[in-house]
Length: 162
Ligand SMILES: [Zn+2]
Image 1 (cartoon, rainbow, N blue to C red):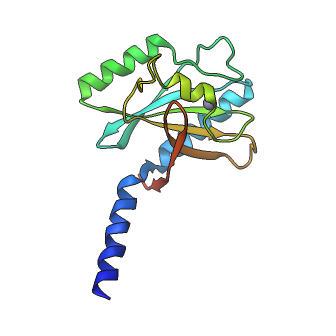
Image 2 (cartoon, rainbow, N blue to C red):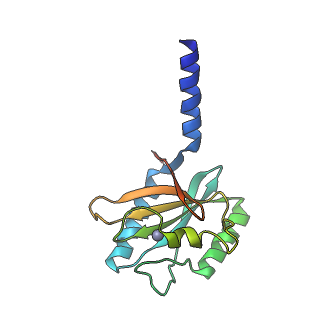
């Protein structure tokens, strides 16, 4: 009995530690951003900054990909500003988000490739990739992943107040 309680507690703590905590306001902001993009038939992108894996700031970054309908490429100028903010605030790049206006909330091969350099090293180690799908516009789907060159691993999103 005691053992099973301990095991349950440990498992609970472990699962909690693996979840990504996402404040409701950022979820709403990502969906609103994705909807604006969809109105122009374009993917949108941005970042979540924070500490210890907890996002405290959302920054939109312009998608400057020449094919914004099906891909995103974060504006280098915008990224530079983000990196400055990270350094000044002692923050982490917790997550990069982008939208799929017409397809499911699952990383494409391009998404995985673009998250790595030519040697297959992550460009932003530890950063989570969030995808907002408006495949069903009335039911936005938002999911989070760790990207590897050959696969994606989903991370559960825990929506928290604030
Ligand atoms: Zn994508």
